[in-house]
Length: 188
Image (cartoon, rainbow, N blue to C red; front, side, top):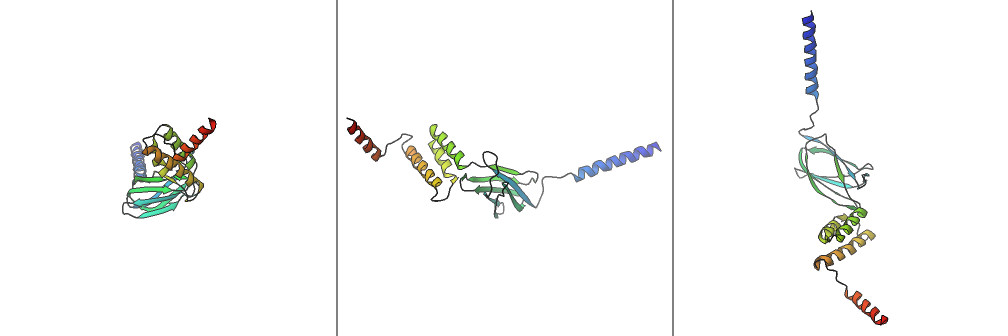
């Protein structure tokens, strides 16, 4: 009798382990699934209404907006490589990010910089003489045409283009030279 109880015990234990292993979730899958992620700013706060685009291996482009929590979902995406990019006014553009979509256990998180943080970085780059890097970063900031922010970016761009073209040497504009010369005469 003890032998039968022991055998039943091992049989049930074996069945339990088999059921547990066979029911374990496999994060890799085949076919289609939902691709989910978040967009946050430099302070890890959600960015609402960030336009996210995803292009899958088959060339199908899908676009969506983040919700108030910064969440985006691309439904029914095919397994494989995909490229994600995004933009919103007053933020640095999210460039093409290639990822392999095949693990449904992962949620993407993209951190983007606001215009204020990006301009701080541009000024830091200028201080260290990285004019080309600063100019590239300026080109990635998204702003509405005609907005005050766009005008500020334009001023920075002109300054950086002048610095780059002169090898980093600051050149006074002719009007500024004349103005300074006029002041010198009055002083004498």
